[in-house]
Image (cartoon, rainbow, N blue to C red; front, side, top):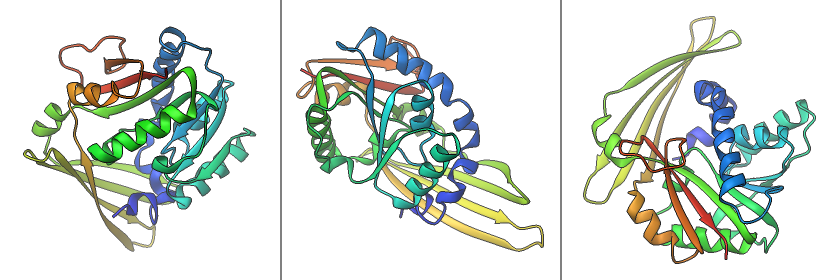
Amino acid sequence: MHELYTVLAEYYDVIYRRRAERVGEEIDFVEEIFKNDAKREAKKVLDLACGTGIPTVELARRGYEVVGLDLHEEMLRVARRKAQELGLNIEFIHGDALDINFENEFDAVTMFFSSIMYFDENAIKQLFNSVIKALKPGGVFVADWSNLCFLQFDRAPTIWEEKNGDETVITTSWKEIENATQRFHLKYLVQILKPNGTIRAFHVHEVLNAYTPREIRLLAEKYFSEVKIYGDMKRNLGKNAYRFWLVGIAP
């Protein structure tokens, strides 16, 4: 489990290069949320499950004071290197999002790339409780997650190829859904081809929890004073959103 975030950490940005190239659009949308939904000005941001810092770095480039936290030190090494190369002052902390000790320190807390789906119902309650403690009054929590309805029908394998210097990285991904439990199995075969013809192959199996907007709302309303759910990157739910965004306002 979690090979994508440990042994493959140095290849994470390569595997997700296309998603990384679109991160600016996501941060544009998040800034809309900061401006229109938060009850206080967003200056200091805690980015949970920050990984290699793809959104964390973009937030810092836009002038936010950002702290990134992740469970995997291998990912944080990459994130710290990127921030240093760009001359950005970002504090990266090794830790568990369920066990953070911040109290009234942040104007906003973010969680990108569907990371919230790693938490089951009990853990997500713990997460919301930690987030509420970390936020200042009127601060905002923003998290995105994938739509279960699309996941149910989008099960055909997807294959893509990226260059990493003189290496070629070929990734095959496929999905399996347990409808009764709403558990989502995301599987990868990552093949790294060297110029001399040798191949390193890794099988990755991640287990996530799929949630409907209604389920997330019911869970979040017990913790936040105001809860909104948006679809894709629009400030409304829409009818056929591929990805949802949770917006929770701290009391």
